[in-house]
Amino acid sequence: MAEYDFDVLVIGAGPGGYVAAIRAAQLGQRVACAESRETLGGTCLNVGCIPSKALLHASELYEEAAGGKLAKLGVKFDGVSLDLDTMHAQRLDAVKGLTGGIEYLFKKNKVEWLKGRASFVDSSTVQVGDRQVTARDIVIATGSSVTPLPGVEVDQKVVVDSTGALELAKVPGHLVVIGGGVIGLELGSVWKRLGAKVTVIEYLDQILPGFDGDVRKESAKLFKKQGLEFKTGTKVTGVVVNGDRATITVEPAAGGAAETIEADNVLVAIGRRPNTEGLNLEAAGLTLNQRHQIEVDHDFTTKVDGIWAIGDVTPGPMLAHKAEDEGIAVAENIAGQTGIVNHDLIPSVVYTMPEIAGVGLTEEAAREKGEVKVGKFPMAGNSRAKTNHEPDGFVKIISDAESDRVLGVWIITSVAGTMIAQATQAMEFGSTAEDIAYTCHAHPTHSEALKEAAMAVRGKPIHV
Image (cartoon, rainbow, N blue to C red; front, side):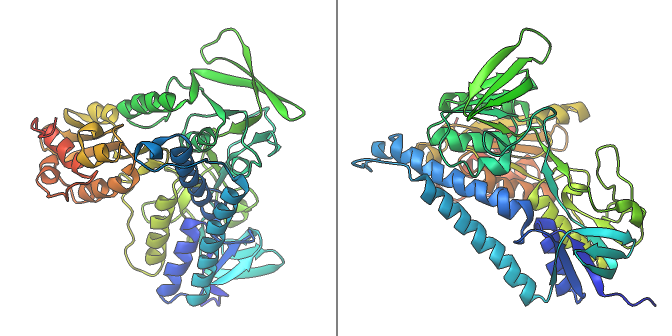
């Protein structure tokens, strides 16, 4: 029997990687995790989910105070000003606390952190910095990075990606966001609340590709009401930087006359791509699919025995919570247990205000599969939302017309990201719309809207 340096080596310490490493250690494995960043947590904790939410929350509070919403509630100020340096400092503090927490968990669970970039030597040997190590099982969890826009250079000063957009030293007079997906809308919302003019350019005819049609239309309406400007069905053909300004050339996606837009900053947010470069996968016997992803089976094994892959480097949505669940599952599979992730029920959330969340099928996708029933309930009819002066949005439930089994749930409201958890759990257990309709919900809560939408599926909502 071969002697290895470690039972399990995890490459990458993002949400999937660090969770896989900790869970494997809990199951009695000798574990190491290779990570080249100075801090653990990957994109999510360092320059993604966590810092963006810190700015989103802070900017929401600033807008409520400066925009007069709190004054309408009887909370008045003599004057409100923006201290952007302090706002950035609290963002960095949140990141420091959470990344440091993972380092503590590594020490607590006896996971060895191998600092450096990892590259395969063969199927069981990996070079990490100047150290070569072997492992019985290797988990690739290297995450993803920003997809570049051909012909557009990101200098992180005038033209930025999602990382640079977190670090802007001043509020842009005009921010142009290229891409109407989750990242572009979240970061665009931050800077709009802080005083920037924001224009979002989207190649498709609607924002939020992949989301339910009603959600896409309602979201666009709400964002326009908030002051964001949109150019949909539009492609960017060039960005020229001159000093501290940029000129963006655009034209209709279907063809037509070009026009130019002047901006102080440009955010390129057209998506993400798997981090597989530099891993020397060929030496391990692995190849990539056409989307540069590593193909895996249902238990996250690759075509090479002893090599596993999870998270953004594999097919499926690039979401931190998906990677975390896969991290637990792959560690349990390596230990001979049964780790399963239901990839049909991975919720998605946009942390704008209001939040946007969905799980399961869109109405369009559900109708392609058969007859459905749809129930919608407006948040304007929800007592808690009305009391909180949050009337925008709705809850929408799509169920199978014959069995009543819930196929999809879509929510727009201030706490949609929290509410979607109940819907996901209900669907995991095969709930019908009637099951949700006859589940008692605490009053007054936003979640009562989920009950009402379920009742609407059966044509008997109470508060509409």
